[in-house]
Length: 401
Image (cartoon, rainbow, N blue to C red; front, side, top):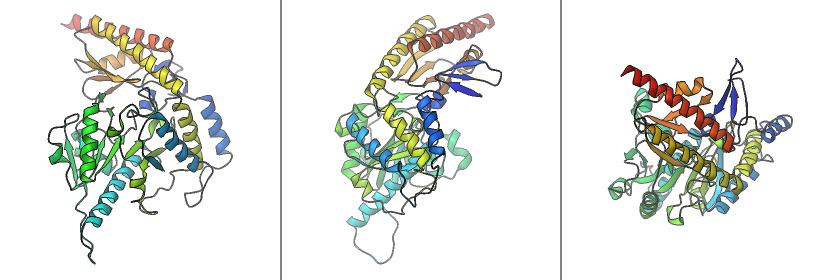
């Protein structure tokens, strides 16, 4: 691809494509958003990087805005501080390290003093089946998928895994040895599966009981994607986390990540415990500040919910017309999945030939994560292309039967 505008991309032969991948849930404001592009130029002519040895005009305001908008949205009621970094996997690595540090502090305070250092007994981390948290070693260790893990084994010890959306055996899975639990409120890469309120409430209750921290990975499902600022913003307080990780849409294509943490977590992390060379740069922070301001707008959230409902209605029509191909529809807002009965590769190729870009997730799932600014006309255009592509794929299969 050589250029983009709004919800469209053009390749090197100037063919136009409607982008329903959104750079894998990154370009939430669309490609080459005018305000975003103007800020890049202005800040690049002012100051790009100076390291976090020094304050700059944008990292503090970004952190303050993230906390303010989180609280205003009904999300994480004890949001207090922010650590900035460069990507989603870095945000999750930071959160996992913070959980280990909290565990170390809490286990130290409950044990007798000793002059010699001892292994931290509160070090275990729990994640869930079909999750995806990143490709660096810590976040990869929390991603129980052999496709990603096997080439890099052995992984970091201390990670345990449990069935997603199941409250069975949580007492034996989250114990006094557990320092943290990481979960996606809506799984993206795993196939677009939403966590139930009851499941998240049970995680919160068990983490509180044993002094573990609860981490919500909202890298893909956060920042307006579900029709609220955070996927957990509409949940009751007894389902809120101690940390929320973010990236992707936070920079609309520019590398930036963040971890929103509670005061209780922040108090356990001392200056120098964790760091980053590029994180929180003036350029990244200014761009992220702009993106948060746009993505926190309730009017955008209402639009996302309307477009999500339109997608769902068109999915129902496709399911009725192609019942042997379309098995189920899932998702919230504009993070949607169309479950197929077979490998979607041929359908993805047929759609691309007609000018529609799609991506897969999980097993035989078409994933839809278009820019949040997608219009009704563009949804209708994309669904017409998809229906045409399905006609071709089903027709080919019928001829070969």
